Length: 413
Ligand SMILES: *Cc1c(COP(=O)(O)O)cnc(C)c1O
Image: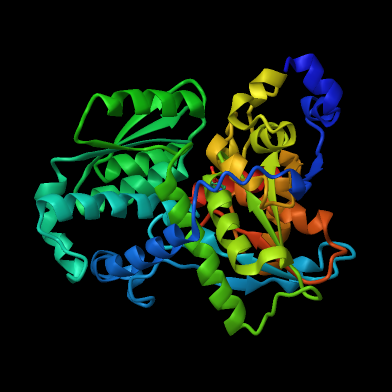
């Protein structure tokens, strides 16, 4: 279908071309349900993460207190909720910005995919078996040094892959788009990671990384647009959230539904979490993906059902936003198709909202999240009248250096 036809059929696109904030509600009955992923893969990922816990505890002191499990707290934010006029439910933040090792939601999928690769190499060439104490992997650095891990990234995925990969001993190359923050590149280089920079956007960085990796049989390419491992790693979050809600005596049912707002870039992270949540909570969870008005690739892909066959650039939308974790022009087709039967909808957020929200959250709760994460907050504004439990998925922020926070705060005004 040509652009003109699409604009006629989906007039919301015209508003999106003008960078207006929009809401798109899904009608589930049109779902294709391609069944490309199963919950067994989620349980498999959970088990693998627990096999690695003794190793992770050994190499990352921050994981001592959780026994090698990478998890974040769920925190109620009543003072912040009061800044939302007429908010009816209870508001929580899922603090993935505090996730150990890399301070973003990518510490779920990204680290998991590196562990999958490490386990494979160690089992084939290092004599590792499933029943072993994985702490012995500290002795495999020389083996891992013969292998390369490559990834294309807007920033946080590169950080997670780079920090985990380098710790294990792999040689890591991160292909980064021009809009990636300098401090992330500097941090990676300080850990011995090779950073290749691209003037083009994120898709170009991924395409180049993928092509280079394909030429090297000892190179594993982390494919953000298509990876099942990433998706599996993210999906484990839902099992852990269920446990946290239980511990907090929060029930999820018809009277007390769960609303979850997830910032969306290419779609893997929110998609994986959504997949798990839908399995755990069924019809009582309502999941919305949040995107910047300047990079609404998933909203366009879902609305038109064209998924990765369309990009924001096709509609003259520039992809330029301060929410660098969400600065993606084309969504994952694999994730988009699966989400047709799972998410309640998508919405877009103006950058100005992000900075306003950053100020309010710091003032009321003393909590700093990077701009991308604040896209989730808008959902609590849009669906404020719904009773029940609302969760803002805070996808990143704790590793943002003080100088950068200062720069952001100047934008509050
Ligand atoms: C990567 C990222 C997201 C979105 O994840 P995708 O898998 O790209 O959809 C959201 N917020 C932050 C801070 C991120 O780094």
